[in-house]
Image (cartoon, rainbow, N blue to C red; front, top):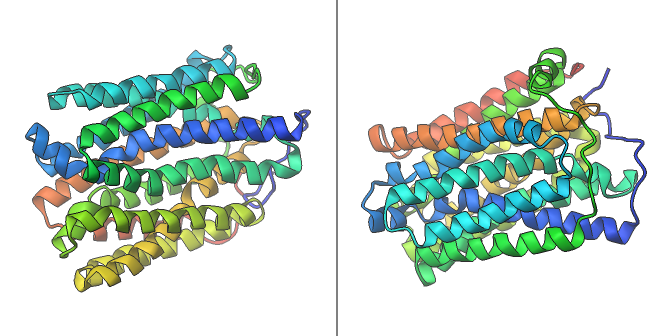
Length: 397
């Protein structure tokens, strides 16, 4: 039986340390560019909506569409490319992101942007599902936890630093420049993949039948998928609309990118704090994440109108909590199914991205039809439910 506090181990031979860490850096840059692409609209909803004549709620589809597509593409791409060298697959997917973002930069109609976001969803789902367990093949066994923290630092840095940086570029120039910059980043990531990744022959013969089998037979994977749904949906119900919420609270639009940058620094800190201990204490860390996210969103709903200083303090708390999410949930999944890493990772990535899409969609409906602060209360309830799902310590298979 595998428990969620069992360190990940594997018997594969390892590469030379320097080459392995350079490969880890290439994967990190790739996942950073993909996740920045997926989440970039969070900080640009208002200017994109104004330029293309759609509401903030409709502009939220720029987050919903790639999230839904990524949820579907994670298992499909993993199975369809099952016999293809992983270096080739990752390179093609990150290159697709570069091209799609450049297309968005030159779009003159919202439908064109959504088409490009569809392509980004394909790339995000496939790349993340394959990259999720790749640290196991790149560095010595004793460094796998650290390598995973670095790789998923790319996810987190994109979520909480890439977004404010893109927002800042948009504020200093315009939203098209921000999309073009991320497109260039995707093409730079492709170059890094070609130069730094070693050949990575597929080491699992994965079929579609294996996916429900892993979910059915492995309780740890089932619990991991459910807590992913709760935490990620809860976060994105609220976070997708953090810019209009801050502006409604009296924060000048020019200050939003700076506040999101602070959120980003807190998130990166949370990622590495969790990454240092997550291999041994993943269950405990997930419980802490639930409490922190719930508290942050409740306090934001109650006190968010208290001015910029209060907003910054609450964003730091929120960033620390969400920053620990990707590395902690990926570790949970890999510990639950060390014998089926790509199958379990594809299920996790599918749910993660479905939750991004659902959170953005549900948040948009609540934002437009109920009240602005309703997204914070919905997010808090979902995060709090994680405590009940994880429950007392127990076996995960």
